[in-house]
Image (cartoon, rainbow, N blue to C red; front, side, top):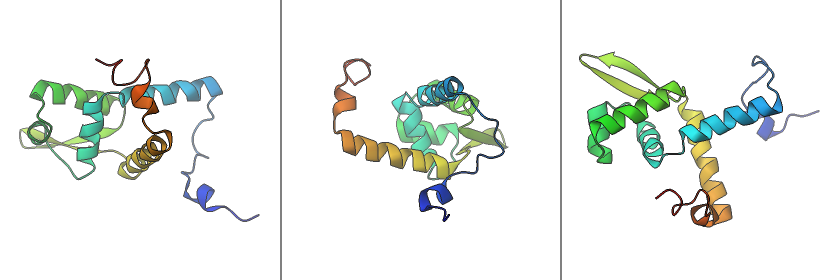
Length: 130
């Protein structure tokens, strides 16, 4: 039986431990919770362009240094970014850039397909987050 393009492009999960449905759902919810802040999404998107230090991210995003540092700590704890020391600073980068890019592309496709429904949702939309 020939392998489809979709399954050929999928990550090899044969070495990962099997997850129960509730465990998989919890892991996915935790991932999306980590991405639930627009500043964290903006940081990830900017880091997809290359490594940046906190100062560069602060300047680009117009956020306070403590805010950027806090979001980077969250993203690092989620395994989405990593850092390496350079002098007295650290450079941050996306841990799995191809996968994060694919996730953002899939999100953009889903948003295009659903229109403004998610933004207008009374539970999670923009009015609910204010």
